[in-house]
Length: 191
Ligand SMILES: [Zn+2]
Image 1 (cartoon, helix red, strand yellow):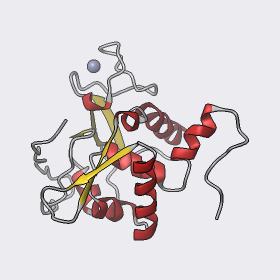
Image 2 (cartoon, protein in one colour; image 1 turned 60 degrees about the vertical axis):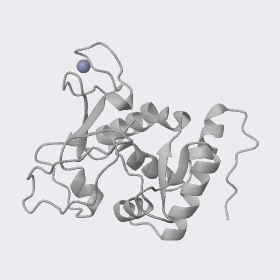
Image 3 (tube, helix red, strand yellow; image 1 turned 135 degrees about the vertical axis):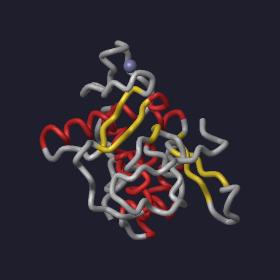
């Protein structure tokens, strides 16, 4: 197996890649910003083997990016939530989403400043308010006419506007019609 570290590299980018540079890890982090917290929801949205997901989540906990705590709603299960250091990855995730949209394929979701509904620019800033909102003040919503093909509970829940980091409720039955609004419930421990 490939070594995780870049011990010979005297650069903070190498230190960051030791934490987020493994395959799947950034997609797990992306989903955590979308409000995914349960193992089964990460798995359903990412289509990755259980063992790989377990390994990546354990690594993110060990590296201080995610906290793992007992799920009060399910005995024996856990929830994964960002630490402050994990939340600080938002600008990097947004920058990569923007680059991917510009140079590879348009993203199906877009991001707005919740306070004024202005779409964020490529730097993650709101031009109306002249500020760069933190993820707690950002909404994600589907780009119109850009319905994805995925039918997993996370993809379906993200078809209505959703605040970043707010726990995603994937327990509701999916909408029957594409685009039909689903009500997203707020749970008590929303930060
Ligand atoms: Zn704004």
